[in-house]
Length: 239
Image (cartoon, rainbow, N blue to C red):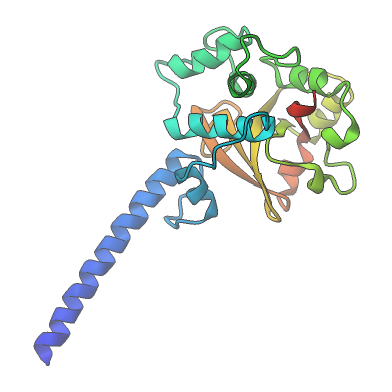
């Protein structure tokens, strides 16, 4: 009986070691994708691991989400300096952003073009988040460009929308009023009761607007500072 107890203890120890190794591997993957590195295989981590179902032809929102997931799974990172690298420069060139320039909006534009098989970017695409917002939303109905100031705005945010934010709430309001401000942008790939999930370029694990790669980011409706600095969301399939 003592031998059985000892053998059981060894087996348990080995099981715990395997569990720890698995959690470490998950945490490493999460950190690389900009997720909370808790070592748990939750919904956000699973979404980054498993490709979405193939989108149907003509479903522009689903095709945009699919394109962004492909870039996320590639693990795009800057190479050779800030805002540089083969994939980063691929995005930048689509909207005329010079090598070394901010590329979050260029990432959005590239994926819109890639998802639709376009040779030229739509007229609303820009290397500037504020310009992107102004051009994209000027002729859109309110239902296709929700902002946090509107009642029931959460129900209007859908996968395939483009999310735009400013540095702070003042900048967000100024941008909605037509002023140019610095900002950040990404594509919404999931929406649920907790918040909205985006795939963003030029960010990092901390959510910077001047990061080092393409990341999956979860934003909570209860995160008041993040919601308050949101300029809005718009549906590019309606433009």
